[in-house]
Image (cartoon, rainbow, N blue to C red; front, side, top):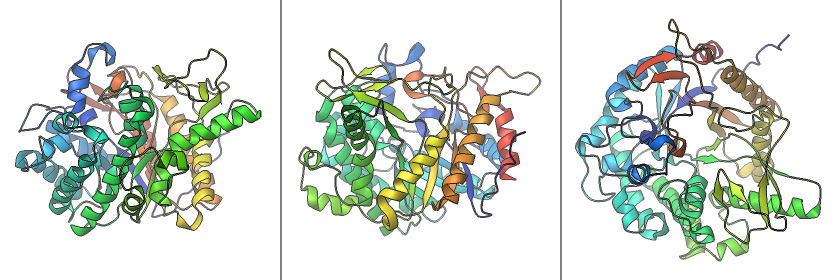
Length: 452
């Protein structure tokens, strides 16, 4: 018999999440500029099946229907992202009123439905013109990002309840600039570190810009997970620690401590680093963790080659990922490790102590290749089991003393899953891409029952 589902606090925030390029489509409409993902997905071989986000889930035209589904689901908040090239087609200069007007309408629709708008300013769709001028390798991009934050904050700040300047800067840095299997498709190895620093600097500048515009409840949505050593050997333990420094603490320590986790990393980023860190560590109202799975790391073996999700790691690194066994796997071939969420929250609580603001789980989810709807139903028991187990693990973290205020299920609807195209389905709502028909899955109805 399954234990009864645990009781969360009455004010716990239940949400669902999405991202602009993954759901909106309408890439050539109403003055939207080109993004790096438009360019990247148009290049042969970059995305599975040659898919692009040109239509995606057509949320740009169907947002009212999607908000109605969210209202019926009962979520207290909807986390969405704003497409920078829709607001400023070239990433700087005049505002595209038609583009910003879309988010005006979306936010109004959410408010009318009693759903708190939770806005991410950057979920990877850098304006192509900004990338052409250096992208996140350039310090100027951080300044342009702050200007964009001011524009959006002044327009929407009276209604948006939560703000996240950045989503997962580690992914843009590692996959976009270091490894090259995400947009903009660069493969720079450690020469990608300026992209990390400039995203974090842009985040800090954007926090200040949002506050100057009268916005409140500002955080970040940052991807984090435990890094496990492949064995108890000193070599594997040191390798796991080095990897965790790169993927976890490089992106959290500057924000929460105002310092880089290792002197050698601080020495590799450009600019007046000490002054920049004062901006990067602008106090937050909360910190958002996106959690999917742990990583198993061992010391690099003789002749070994490290890979992460099909991309070669830069040569010379002292570690290599190993396969995690003994756990069920999603259809995206990711291990399902619910206790990793509890462990991640515990890591943050222990590392930052009183300096840690309240936490939100800003993403957690799984891809399964769901069947097509039959008689209006999509059974997805594995997704229900995933969220059930992760929420139980999160409840345990809270029982252990962690201050966690909410959970956003990834994702509200099926959508374009970046380099994996449309094969992967994370949604609580099934999307038939040929007709754009929405069908709530069994997990949608389960989540609704949990929210109560």
